[in-house]
Image (cartoon, rainbow, N blue to C red):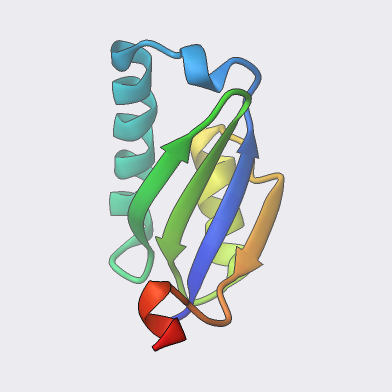
Length: 90
């Protein structure tokens, strides 16, 4: 199944408290349960004013539906075409 990187513009994201991040995570998980097993949240990276999320999903529309139902932005959705790391150089 395709993997996606979602860019969410959230001013001050890096200053969210652990409790706020927990609340966002709980909302996301609730929506994921509603949408079913075809969409999975893998991991997210919180930066200054953005959160970058990695999801496995059948398509971009399912990603956008998750964002709409959760009430958080999906400013850009990119399908991962390849994954590289230091071992790729070998």
